Length: 85
Image (tube, rainbow, N blue to C red; front, side):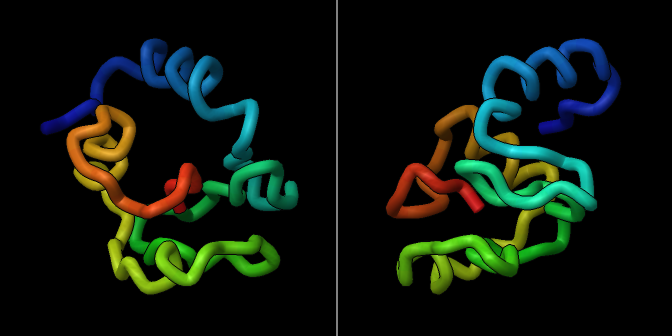
């Protein structure tokens, strides 16, 4: 499944569903959720300075377009907490 192509919808989706808890700006710290800068290629539970459950750290999912979309669409459960990353 590809979500590439409609950047306006993607930006709006981020603003309405993600921005309250996350940032994507490298120089900004974590919010309620971890910073998402450099998300693709990173394993769950790996942002320095963010507190994760053991289940989240051990999940072993590597973030890419498919895992992110699946998570956002609730097609699968990526973690045992509300914290996606």
